[in-house]
Length: 312
Image (cartoon, rainbow, N blue to C red; front, side, top):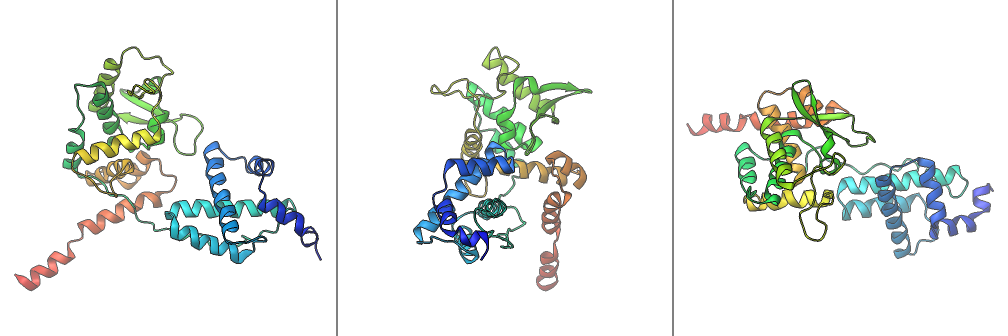
């Protein structure tokens, strides 16, 4: 009998009574970012709740697979995949530490659809959305600047939220906004601000008043937290509000749709896949190719040719 089996009672207590010290040891081991730690905390808590609800005291590989099926049925595929990854990482570590066997070893990942879950906007829809921002108010000027920025640069909500006034800098003969991209710790990349977008941002900043270099580029205008940095949730809400006001009320149209719109309009107007990859800062060009394949299908007029042959 091996050491893990001998210490079975201790192991079960460690898993079922997952304390702060144990979790801290694990997250220190994987050296995760705060956002990742937050996701992993939710994932492990979800797993422990599921074990408890099902009366499982000593989980095994079959239980991990059953949990995977449960989260796949009750969560979005990407969320389910993140949760499963956390569980797999956790049990890999418990095995290394001699706390509990790696019961998640070789459990297959949650199947993800490689297509996009969000739609993009047409040029006229973008104009309709932008027209809903009231330029006579500070909030309207801010919203117009944010939406214009996101739809022309493909920035994520987290990248917009992290932007400071001092991140707007001259590069060559244009103005750039330096950003802290996904998975990065510093603002080493930038997007180009076209003249209409730069003018929109500066009009908002002028109406806002004196802004210090290290202050957020976009801030709240509500009485409760006026002047504070916008959260990703606030930015998502701003985008959704203006989409709805423009008559574009769909679950498939969100703030992330503006990123899809930037990629799609760039490709439709002559941009290459490589240029679009650089614009969106995709690590793999395969991710960018999803947009290209979608457009190829959109341009494929096979159905019309067949219909013309039959009905004309």
